[in-house]
Image (cartoon, rainbow, N blue to C red; front, side):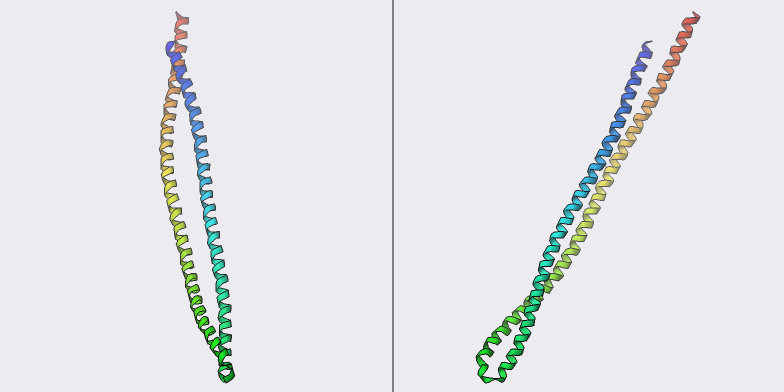
Length: 188
């Protein structure tokens, strides 16, 4: 009878283990959802950064268009300078236009610099994509490690389940022994 009580207690413990297994599965699911939310947050931050870079690029393009317009004005001023050379009375204006031409050359250099900045921006975008790929690979490595840990936990749970099954078998044997004891008492 004491053995039967002990087996009953073991059965209770087995049921508690089963409930713990269920809780472990629920916690695992919650952890997976938390990781997914973390990934979504990272993607949101990356999109915000890309939007900021896009705004910078738009501003640079706007400056480039302004420089292009200034270059057109510079070419027009060059034509005016040619006309001023024909007319001797316009020498003063010619000097002014010469200065404007010098400014035009400066603006041309600025335009070249703007084009160089555009190329650098393209390279920056390429580097950003490479960085994104590196971050994705890092996340995949983390996920791989997490999966390894989950596999270990699964193996441990499998062992616990085996122990639970053994406890169940022991309980069955205890019940059989109890029945045999009853029969023995009846025969006596």
